[in-house]
Length: 107
Image (cartoon, rainbow, N blue to C red):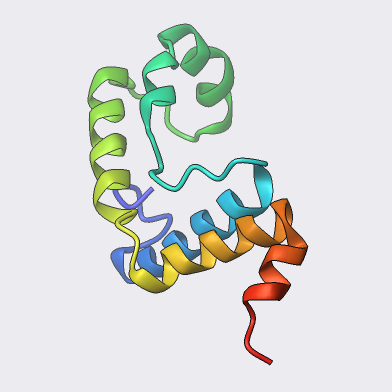
């Protein structure tokens, strides 16, 4: 997306915050390591069926290269700060044990 100018590096921090928020609200068990192994299951057939119909240019899509670039980008982007880790921990605690969360809060 950066390569094609959909967004630029200055928006990376906002992208990171969006990914963290989505991770928090979309799963019962939050993936705090932002594991990218699911990317390996993407096949050329899936790209042909799901991606190519929605992109403007029909250039050759190098799946192997794209997987490597995306995994590296996510690895670098999703290094969580102390505050981001705390946010996910608290969000998870509220969802799994609201009374525990209330007991930890200072009054």
